[in-house]
Image (cartoon, rainbow, N blue to C red):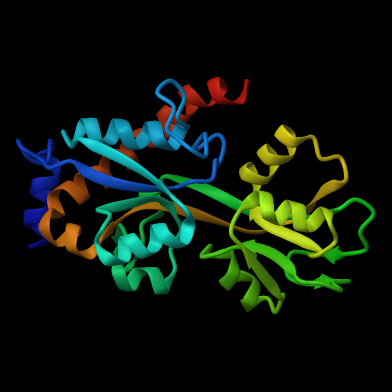
Length: 253
């Protein structure tokens, strides 16, 4: 069976009449990997979105993108309402209902869409002490986003977290002193602060965690179209580094 899937994958395009793939992405901008909260810009959608688009074209798979809040994105993937979802890290809970690219039973990092870091943001003048594993000086909880994997990471470190529905809500809570820090994707946090001109917030180092993010499929879609899934993963791994090297300067200018 594995040999058959490999042969099918190497024979991409995946099929002559591949159905359109309904791909879910989070509705929060994560520059430079995904731009815009409300739509997918045609000219500069983000380097990870461009990677997904090029992989789909190489596999001859029409692509439809749907932007959703994090918890709803995961629920629709679990229910099979989405065929796939992008820019999601590996968790055992998600692996129950989603299919990741695997190598020897573990997520195949070579087939990742990107590697993203979670970092902590705090108010200027804070008294927190952070060494990468221990956070001292908390009087209130650390803000997070609902459904994001950082919640489990903080729990393992024994750091109390309080989830909210959006990046903006968390930064407003931080500025108001309702949380002592906010843990989020570094490109996302930096982009928000740059757009909103927030001088009283600082970033703590080192990162809480850096992890690979993948294109994953609903179990029902992967069972129906295994050759398409393997083709897309293979193209992502093949195209990623060169595409990012070529396109990243256009997003960072």
